[in-house]
Image 1 (cartoon, helix red, strand yellow):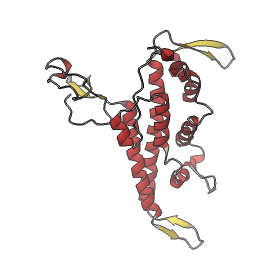
Image 2: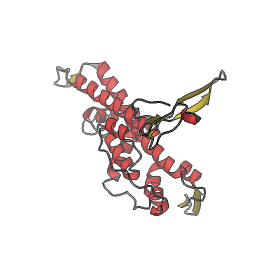
Image 3: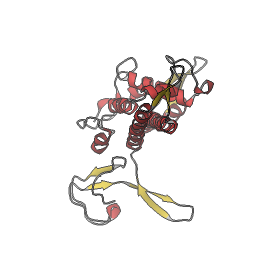
Image 4: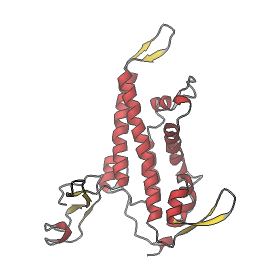
Amino acid sequence: MRESRPDPRQNHTFLTEGVPAGGPLVFPHQAGALVGSVMPVTMPDGQLIWFPAPSFTALYLVEAKGHLDRGKRLRKRALAQLRTAHDGKLLVTDKQAVLDCFAEMTKAVLLSYAAIEAVVNEMIESQDDAFMIKHSNAHCEEQELGKAEVVRRLSTPDKLHRVIPEINCEPSIKGTVHWEPFVRVRRMRDALVHVKEGNYSADPDNPSTYGMLLRGDADDCVLDVCALITKLDPDRLSEAARKTLKIPTVGSAAALGPCGQT
């Protein structure tokens, strides 16, 4: 697909050399040209449609940032319109703004966590068919799990702690500064998904998940996930995605095989 500038959410590349007309690119392209990937789908009426192929990581995070930014603006608007009740309580008067804020921030948290899960699972599924992990079941019996079973049966924390180190040949990030961002996002995601007691709390110092959103506990969810994903795979996010997400551009790492073998 011919492109003028990259959409950070789409899989794209810049050609290192010119390509003549014909084949999948259809049109001739000069060296340095931007090319976006496309994928086909057969629609219910039988039409064959080609559509832009997203980079799932960038799609989730760019959209998460959009929701987060809107949520912050709505929160600012809501908190600018408080009134004092007869008993001294400060009340939010713009109900629509604060509820819209919660909706936007919930989307940001869920998309951010989805990006972690998707990256981790893709890293595992990209291994060859011989990839195996030893795992102890509930009866303390050791089993060997293939990559499909690892993706299906292990939790995301277990994958990050036990499986990803086997893939990138580095120590586990658990207990390091790189683990902290993951824990923050996971706790907020779990609180939103595994609702307890209607997500209500009358304790201002131990608020509900929505009170946490209102005080800013999820404000760094996108940056936290970007930091974690960059640690796991420095080349995962394109330069265009990094600019949109407003995170530093990193140098391209050499492509290595298992345990650093070229």
